[in-house]
Image 1 (spheres, helix red, strand yellow):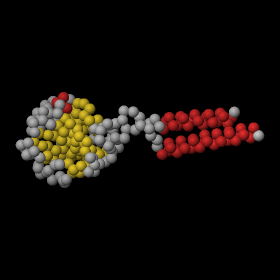
Image 2 (cartoon, one colour):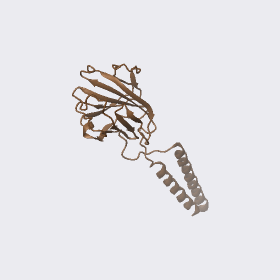
Image 3 (cartoon, one colour):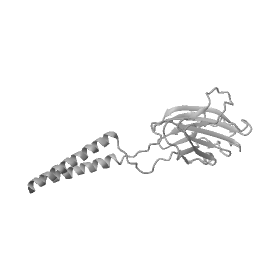
Image 4 (cartoon, helix red, strand yellow):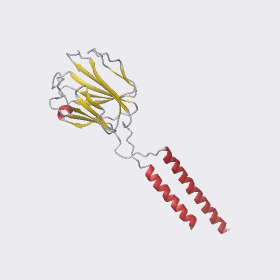
Length: 227
């Protein structure tokens, strides 16, 4: 009876440990990763249809506290979180036009050291910014197609070793109202993903050994009594 109770107790411990270690949520997207952003400006007339390098920021470590790129290119505050980002328009005084004409594009290239951005999508925001916005995943090794038309002296070419995505604001984007936002979702899983740390796996292995030893001893004791 004692062996049976010990086996039940060990089994219960194993079940509880497995429930704990394999029910932790993993949202392995951007938290703790380094992110860099590059901006380009394209206009059918002003740049002859070429993308002109305009500004860059980073790399910055992604956290859920604070804004990673405050005042980026004196237009947007860019807050990157584990599963997405939000760009907030705080200034429009440097805009050539508050309403982007056809043939003009404002692009933001985001590169990450390791996070997978293959499932990015626009998740919301203000109508003025989201009416003509797109996001497109970029493959590892992607070279940003910009030229230094404004003479910034920034070292080109720009390459995204692990890829990332580009957010494009096209003709019809309305920058009139400050405080507008556009948000991007990185495609984090909606449900928990089974995971366990190295120490968790070690503890589970030890518990399995305990259950096995107790069961074997119980079986041997039963045979001895029968003999």
